[in-house]
Length: 435
Length: 204
Image 1: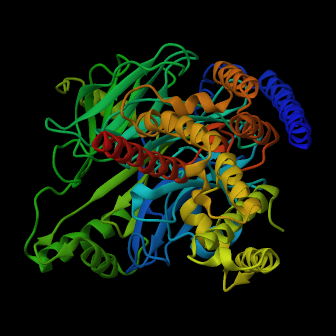
Image 2: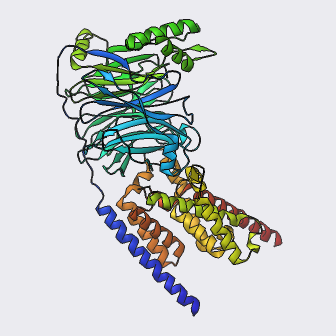
Image 3: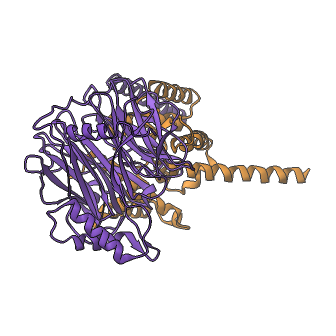
């Protein structure tokens, strides 16, 4: 009798909990944001002179450290803020996320500053963090600056999760870190690299990728409050990563991914016609890709501008290419870097590196120091090699293009060019062969 | 000041850490009071900061936040003051673990990129998934499988109220730890059944 009484009570309590669950789930679902269309980037306003401009400089200045994976964001006042990670070596506990601000009016980068390190992150997240990596920034439509970066608690980069911090004052001060939960398997193996973009309802898309067991790209749709609203798979299997999403119109976009699969190594592409709800079966494009990140922007005339290591091996070549047919065919516009071939002569390597450093930034006083940094990071017992990788391209509201990339794992290099310069290159290369 | 979701995450991990003591052989010989005191002490110790972080935070870095199902099983083990292997003897618990394994076996490979279909996406508030789960919980309630009905209902409640950092319902329903545990218990159970069958066959 007593047992059946207890059972009846439990039976009733479980039913009440079930009803509460049904009610709360209905409420949550009814408040779920609906499907949104892509927001087109604001049309760039050409300001200043139409004269061709191409300028190069170094964003980071600290020598003899490992520096990698830069990203850019335009601030509310038109200045450009860069983020990258730096430390004694990739994955070392002392790696931190650094930042500097570029003032277009003076054409100068400000001093680099530390934004967040491993200790601050783990104190904030209340979980052990072993190392930090790839930072990607986004300025949401409400003016909040978001910085997403990779954190690892266990294992290598395959064990990554994404952590986010926000700033309401364009990067002068930052919130506590928070973790994005993106995977059911211990939340491991989600990394960021591609440029975020806005949806029409104020939410934003964050291209991400996995590299644990499989290598594939995904797209997170994130609310202005930082909640993941939805997640879309761009590819599957074990062959593609680091997607960059290029919005063509409110419904249509192309995602380009780094090829981690078999030869021929080519940039992989997938498209959507319903604002990212569904993506086509990924295909290899004609663009060569040595398993390296690509970056790009959609121009106001619909052309797509891409920066990539246009080769099947190594990252010593960096090219600017353009497509006028939505990503079907491509034409090389300009060779940004070309230092192919390994060098067993370290002295010669250091000499070339110093010349390249001086040519990049006449303001640096110690090009030999830059070259020694490159030697530290790019020479081993087998020889030395140049690396120009992890490009990140944005177009500012004034029409200028800003490109940053890793310079020999030692510095972040910045290239600024305008539409005038691009048009001149296009005229010169009018008869260039299509990819 | 820690966030609410950090507190819930850390206490979940600390509970699991304390429940881990029940695996020590012979611990059941302690009196109930001593056992409760010991478990409570370990629970508190795991939440006290040593160095940069509490011990539970180091564990959380590896384990992630524990699902409601895992916490329910830990709660069962702690409330019985017995060993967690009690599940071997409970049909209700076995039914729950069968369900966990049935879901986990396709969920993890598909979520880790096996095909273009991503079941994890459904956890961000897909009405169909929630309807199926509520129907399943209701069926379990009708069949008097209170453990299954409670785990599903509490997981949905916790998800809807933002109990953890995750906005994905799957993270409240199951985690790799309860899936591995379920797989191990079912494998042992299967082996036992086979051995019993062989024994009874030989006896004939």
